[in-house]
Length: 167
Ligand SMILES: CC(C)(COP(=O)(O)OP(=O)(O)OC[C@H]1O[C@@H](n2cnc3c(N)ncnc32)[C@H](O)[C@@H]1OP(=O)(O)O)[C@@H](O)C(=O)NCCC(=O)NCCS
Image 1 (cartoon, helix red, strand yellow):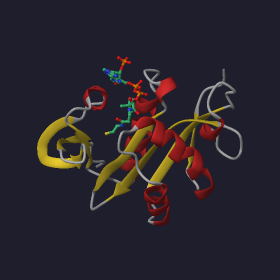
Image 2: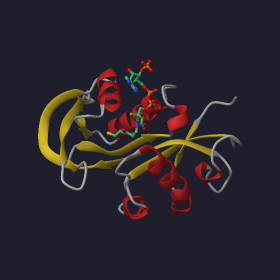
Image 3: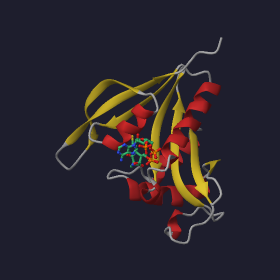
């Protein structure tokens, strides 16, 4: 099977991106959240592979490739913030999130960012393990940051990856 490739997200991809997003999160981003990210010029990329008949048709982008996962990041003052990182349920533990994180890191370094920041639900053990494995440190907690149910909220762990500054 050919290797996955990275491709910039476009408005025409959002039905597939949102379908994978909905299959992956208890509290998914809306279609509008992704559209806003594209409008605001955020770094938004997809990991793709050739069409896979066994994957739902809705997980295929208009050109026919199968969406494995997606990531969205934003450049602030000297720092990049990862806003969304998602891999489809049937292709996890194959290094795809690590590949997306590496792509974010490469972009951040090209922007001369000093660090990458992100928030993750305290109960999201898989994501916390992923980020730790990629070198991120847990630096703070934001109490009751995420919705959990109609009556409950969940803390966020703030994680940071320092980047070497080019001399
Ligand atoms: C978290 C998520 C993005 C990981 O994607 P993935 O493609 O499976 O991750 P990778 O295969 O790149 O994993 C790299 C490493 O992260 C860690 N890791 C990933 N998933 C893990 C899990 N379920 N349990 C423990 N460690 C895990 C492991 O160290 C893994 O290396 P290994 O497979 O060699 O042990 C994916 O599970 C997902 O999309 N979850 C739902 C959405 C989500 O929570 N997004 C993050 C929001 S902050």
